Length: 354
Image: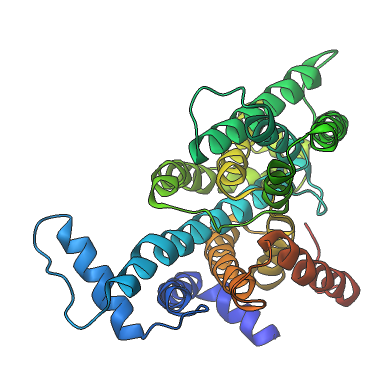
């Protein structure tokens, strides 16, 4: 294991390339594997045909049933790609929150973002306060609720002094409890059993309702936030040594913290709005990667994004395959996998956080 850690540290670019290849293979396998098994060659042909067809160049793949083509293109491909984006977004958010708070137990939901998103989504499903209808309503409600919780936490954290990690966490815990209580009240008093079931399933997290319209907004947000976090790698490394050391090295702590919390909050809000509340990804994945490459954010950020993407794809495959044709909410599986892994890492004491 130590040799592997040294090799990854010395050849981070090669490790990123290997994980990128593994991610591409996971995407194809994730589309092929399911209650209805599809040959890998058919997956390639359908995706190639549909993609080229967008430019008027492709032809329908011969010998593949239309039902199979629809499963590949309309059901599994957007689901797998969305899982990839959600996994990367949550992993990067976890890296950002742990760096911001200098707390190994911090995760993307520490600011009450998940509770705010749940309240917005439940309001959209049960009360119908949003003007649009359909699936877009739930995503818009969740994103709006997440942004409201972020705004509330930031405003309350600034009262009485500058925003500090401890103050932000305390306000986030209180806001999370408040939004959670409001959500539970709405679900408890809702008269529609079908809507209650839908709301409960959404709060457990899942990718079963993914479609192509979910992907562009998250992808367009993920790219600049990833690059922005990479640009902050050196200041984040300095901050891990303590505020006084960071200031001595010329780091503008307030500016870096504002940018970091903004990117982390936006990534978490966007991910939660399309997938529901999927826990442990933002907590465990950064720890797993940090145990191999150390706390250097120049290595940690790209590797965590890739590992988070791969992890989410395969957890979603498990959610589809454990009890077909029904599926298990992804948030349940991430908790089942993440909690024992996190406990093992704590017991093994494989690395220091700083």
